[in-house]
Length: 137
Picture (cartoon, rainbow, N blue to C red):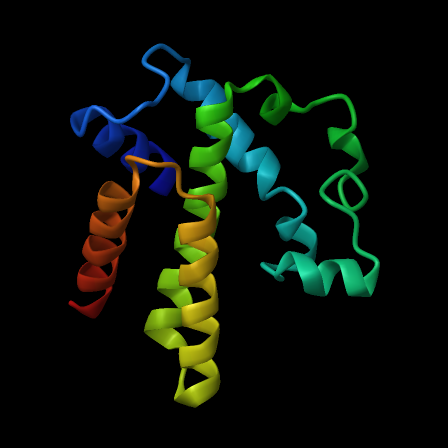
């Protein structure tokens, strides 16, 4: 859902994003991206790598013939990557505690900024703010 909201906001901001795409393909790619988490939980990629967990077909072999992510245009792949990082950041910002929580949130925010294309930053920051405000209610 974050990916769809981000696409909508980027379109309104007239940022460089695909104008014509199948929403179902984007949602299917998002589900595929998170498929392994149905078995492992939402574990950060570096932790999965250190535990030897493959992404995502290793945990879900029935997905080996399905990869909707690879056929998405580049800007939509970036959107899914950002949506995943935004979800992680807002979760940590809301539920993290102490100095470790703050460090983890800062780290995720830097990761968001690293993958955020030129012209998207204001839109992405606005979405993060809105999600964080909504979670505080």
